[in-house]
Length: 368
Image 1 (cartoon, helix red, strand yellow):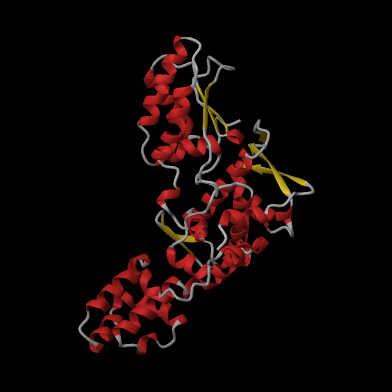
Image 2: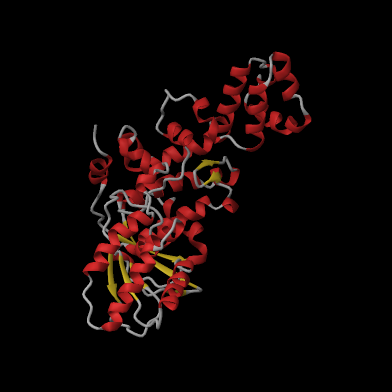
């Protein structure tokens, strides 16, 4: 069975032309959707130019801005106000939102995921297990094994039916006023749901409705987009595909990954004066104190990516910002995954504060 990296290598193409994509930071979603729906756009290399209030941000795209574009676009798709997904960080389920379907947002997202992976950009590890199972046409998986993905009123209904004593109980539960609206929704897809009194069959039917039936159109559109370059057909049997689309703690830019990649590089960093010795100490304390999202924020600041690329052994680099010794804020060369340590802070507190500020505003700030 082929490894996913081998398949992706075969999909990489030498683009004959480059397309300059100018993107206003406050209008990323619409700009990227319009681009992705352009016929055969995936066959050309893009060079991203970010703008803020009409002004071009000073950065030459040799990879970093493009990776940042996919990161920001993915976050826009997951934003609740967009109405494309429901769920939490543990896993998102697509919503068959009429506008999203009409304007082919899910198709565009699927295409973006493929283009991102093929060009060294971030993964999209946000789907639930049930959604992933549907996307790869895994017919062996019973939807009931994904009951932990149910939520709200659906979970409450299922729990009550499971605890019921028999057929009469099931009927009385489904007739309760609190479930009227939900039962009407389910009945629109499952016409005979109100006649089912067998507990096991009822649970199976409702679970399948919530996880598959009510969102099937969106998932079909996702599949179409994910099959750009025949990607999904070629990789659905590859073990490595799942970690690209479903959260896996072994493929997360956490504090362990950041410290294991940066602390040795920091230790090897040569110093020219006492100030650099001091800053080296400040940086070590900062890296050792990283927790949870702070590590992911720093990784994103350095690379433009919120998630790891397909090659999880990505190298990270660190250096002093010797070109601007008075600068008090950290900088990053995203194309080279290079963190530039500021030399202008007088003490460790101001050094840590400078990183806090830079990471909080990482979308607009500090990258070259």
